[in-house]
Length: 601
Image (cartoon, rainbow, N blue to C red; front, side, top):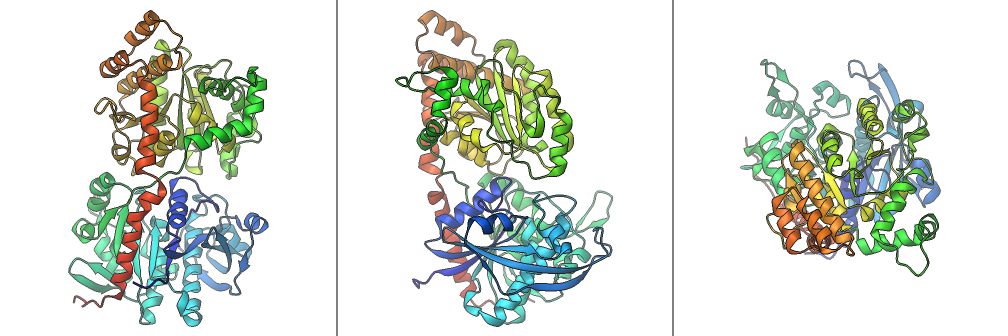
């Protein structure tokens, strides 16, 4: 194999360092960073309004090529009936990775491509359309001028980038070329687009090569739609959802856990059409408890000592961090939580009453400290935050000073939930706080301060959030779904290696019992000065019999679980380690691209 690094293109709507909403941005950035010694990566991403910020922070090249044209928008669900677009390309280098931002230059293009809200429902279709047209123009220009820069592999991330990849594939075919492809489905959302919209994106009737189990077949977009379309419950033909098209046209289909691959991806995206070319690659996490603790102390140590009156000679304990976080820091952020959407910000200010919720997402702290459970993620029914709210009464009946702190990301799709969640905060004002938006100054602090992390998803392809928790020595209570089953070890099943508790989704009773059991266990391990009788009294209050038995045998068992969490991530889920499988898949696709196939009739 040649020592020359091959070109791999990444198509994505999120990339950490440019913009990210959830795990997608972390995955694209960390995989490319950890494999940059083996491949030349170029990432194509809509600007999402980040160009001005990035050009002030980094050196860049504005590529001397502008994509222009007119698009007929009639019947596409956009407010305009037609539009003239101008798209420019800004090239940056992030730690050896080339990033190309597709930026709107005229008012029409700016409205969509430059919208800072990544998935704004009011602008998303326009953004997808212009992104696709921009990618198509870029590849056409590159083929005509710089063949050496063409990719050997294109890596698609989620459905948003399926249309632009089809245009890339078509331009290759028109020039008697081809390119290998891999799609990662991070989360099935099943959006459907009419064929008319797809064709407006610049996709024509040029047949493309599709890898089937028996070989390669050429199909045009009409045939692809026909093969992937489905019938609704009333018998009507529906357009296929975009992930199904992406799975069919890609040479390799991967997702982020074996469980999700078998339970959702293969059965819902084509069955035998894709089974032979399906695999999974775990996500990773490079958080490190010791680095986080040192950074927190360096950043807040003086303030912690001043607020809590701790002498310089005393070590700041986790108990101290917790008290500082709950009774002071969450109410005294350096700046308001970061929120990109005006609609979301307006809704948050609508719920603000000057008491718990103040202006622009700021909140008042708790009056006292207590056992702490935290949760993070975007607001969605998928994430199961409502299970927490339902369980609070039964938990605080046993542990009156229990605290729940949620650091969650609102979107335009969750405006009603923001209002609903705020009512729970006001109802349980002594026990619950929610920070809506990104609050980076307390994110790491919360993880190393808390006693338990809550991940109650109703479905979860992988869940980087639980790796972040475990890397912070934070035991996890999670639902037994998707990737959680592959990352978390239930301490009741494997006490020596356990990292948390797995339970049935939507089971409020199981959840309450688990929270009480782990918070009681944490109290015993944290308060080493307790006499034997007091420890025994607390142990008897643990409702889960298996956990009670473990703590009775070893009062410091909770601390063992905390260490297990760190070891689990360190040994199995560092990005460098988990990315090696993807590296081999890339090499396989490069070899696949060299192979001459016989087409099937």
